[in-house]
Length: 362
Ligand code: AHG
Ligand code: MN
Ligand code: MN
Image (cartoon, rainbow, N blue to C red; front, top):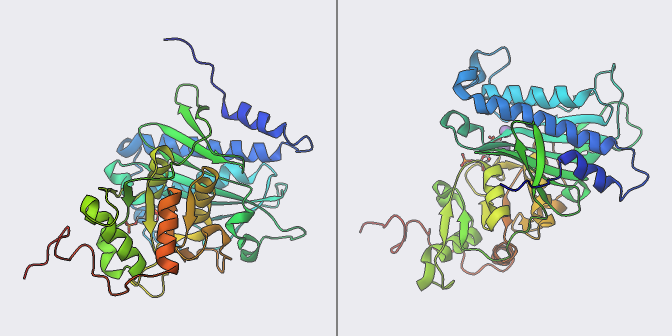
């Protein structure tokens, strides 16, 4: 096989930095530390049951329910600890926030403080761990407001447009790191022998059109009219108003769905619904929706709540949830139009009408 000269993540970051002659290198150090945490988590995930890391954290040393009221898996706890330990010492960060920590994490006094904030979902899709399906980590980097001593929740409540960088690691058949620093999207594959990420997917672009959608259809009775209309039309396929057949996917790991969409297009929806009035959506704005939105938009796709661009939402709370729609631009724009210009609010439930997936028996 001919030898391919590939760029490491380190080389990529150094070459990017040359565009900013005054940059200190701290930002690159931060991204490399995040990559280190992801490599550590990739190893833990890969050992599976052999590492005694499957199952819930109930009998572990930490509590088993996180701030979201969700049962923590052992790997949720371990992954959160890896992110904190690998990032707290270096002097790049003023603070961190995570799905698994109720309050912002303060940099210990023995370490210098830096100018960035790191937000993360240390393990996304963790219900998939025990069944050996792909999971991932998601991260977002913001600038810390100046002059603060200790970080507060307020410091993190910045819109997605303020992100300096965002990305995810996908722990699938291969481990990949997908990153944007606001200059396109690049994908790196982990060489497990060298422990290095290599640039394998430069300048990722999301195709503008697609015939693939991802949604948890078990929530269909709670969907709002615009979402019902869109899915009804997709399910109607070639004989419906769209004039083409669609494919449906649902992995229940948003990272894996986002990756598929970056690779070949598609649309992902976990929209606002009426399931639980206290929860406007399932996914969290600051460390799930916004970083994926930044990646999508940098790759030419689009990300929206249905009513406004996701990254324009002014956050109200650290763990705020939100309706999320992202992927191929033309599809997302169509769904947005259905929200702003609703057709028929009485549209039937697409999964239970006469010609649908589950036919209503007379
Ligand atoms: P997490 O494991 O970090 O709590 O996130 C899981 C999220 C997301 O990855 C996925 O799209 C969604 O939850 C799946 O939800 P359902 O179980 O409702 O399908
Ligand atoms: Mn998640
Ligand atoms: Mn998680």
